[in-house]
Amino acid sequence: MTTNSLAERLKKEAGLQAAKKDKEVLHAHYVASRPAVRLFTDTGIRIKFVDYNFLTIDPDCITYLDAEIKRNGIPGITRAGDVNISDVSPMETLEDKLRLKILEDLVKEATDAALGKTKDMGTTRDMSQVLGALSTSKTAS
Image 1: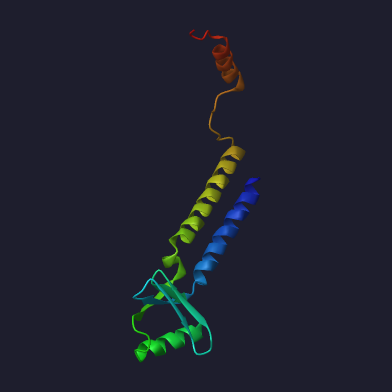
Image 2: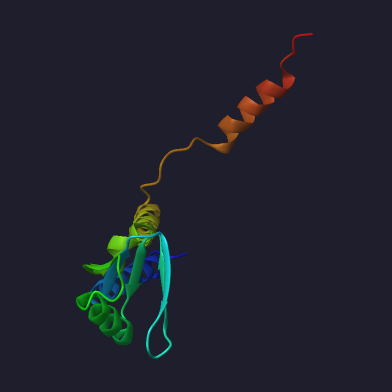
């Protein structure tokens, strides 16, 4: 890849991550006293708690659960507040940071190579001499 195409990919990736951050939506977070709970709203929407938690952005689910909590209709369920999905799933955020770091490193390496600032890894002649010496050496019997 050329330096320009890598730089363009880096800009695009950084732009996508910034847009993703701007579009982050708060999810309503509900907690149950039991590890697995299944409910159905009056309109037939299924609500499933997994590992004591339920996250949603569906206004019908939020309205239903808030009303039930307010009238104490479902014991053991409380609203924990609103959370960003990146707070709940840090691996997604970490993967985005890692992807950006890899692209930055690739751009730096390509730029250095274009400017002739590459690392000196020795020559093929040096390596062939080493390999030749190894192949002609006697092995212990």
